[in-house]
Length: 396
Image (cartoon, rainbow, N blue to C red):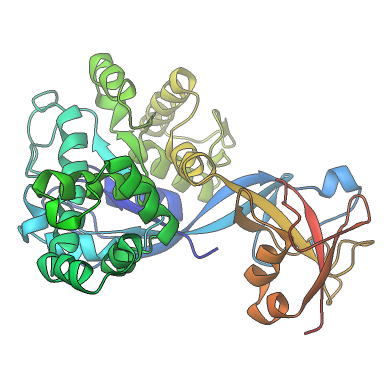
C-alpha cells in the first residue's frame, strides 16, 4: 500500500525533532517559525513480531530488518512547514503546507503540551499558552482548506448536475480526488453530513460539514503531546481527554537516547520503556541527562515517538502485516531468502490485493494463493489475517 505519514503542527513545537528521532535523518532545527520550508521526507519504522522463532527458521530480511525477533517495517514520513492561523487563506506557508499533505494517509499532530509556543509558533514562557486550542485550530484549518477545494467551481458543478444529471457522489469525488480519497469515503462523508439531495440547496455550513467529514474519514489525526517532559499534568490530562487520540511524547529525549545508543553509550531499542547503560566512563552531565530520560520513561511507559507512529498506522489506518513468499514449504523467495519481506496491508485485504501489492503483473496473472502455515490453497477473495505467510501463484 502506498502510505505516507504526515507530521503537522505549528512552527516550533518539535516537529523536526520528532522527524529526526523517528527517522534518524538530520534536519534543520531552530526556535523560530518556518525553519522547515521544504518538506523533509524520510523513513520511519514500525514494529511487528517476526514469525521466524515460531517457525524454527532463521529469517533473511530484504528491506524489513529483524532486530531481536522484531520486524522493522518502513513507513514513509513527511515533515512539512509549520501551520499558522489562516493558513487555508495562504497566510505564512499555508498553501505549501496543505499541498504537501494531499497524499498523506494519516496525520500526526505535534502539539507543544508544555504551552511554550504562542498561536503563531513563537516561543513564550512555559504554561502561557493552552495547547488544547492548537488541536481545534489545526483541524479547522484543514477543514477550511478542504472546503475551499469543494467550493472551487461549486456553482458550475451544481448547475451541471441540475441540467445534465449525474451521480452526486461521483461529481464530488472528482472535485477532491487530489486528496487521495476514495469514492466510497466520499459517499460515506456525504451521508454523515446529512446534506440536502439537491446541491443547489447546499449552504456554507453544509460544505463545511462535508469537508470536516472528509477529513475525519480520509485524514485521521493522532496527537503527539510533545515536550511532555516540561508539561503540566493538567495540560497532559486535557489533551488526553479529547476525542482525537493522544500519546505523551518527548521527541527531544527520544532523539538524545537514540544518539546515545548510536555512540554505544546505552543499549536501547526504539519503543522500549527502558535502556541499559553500557559504559562506565559516562560524565556526570551525561549521567544526569540519562537519569532524567529514564525517569520520564518509567512514568510514561516510554518516550512516545515510536508509540504514536505505530498507533497511527495500526490503530487509525487499521493495518496488518503479511509476509509474501514464493516457496510455502521453506518460506523463501526465489533467491532462497527466508521470510524476505513484510507488507503492510489494510485490514480486510484479500489474497488478490496482496498479489497486486507485490506487483501489478502478479495481480493480473493471479491463479491462486497458499497459506504457508496450513499449506491450504486459498482463493482470490480470501481475507488475510495479521501475520499471515502467503504464497501467490501467478501466470506472470
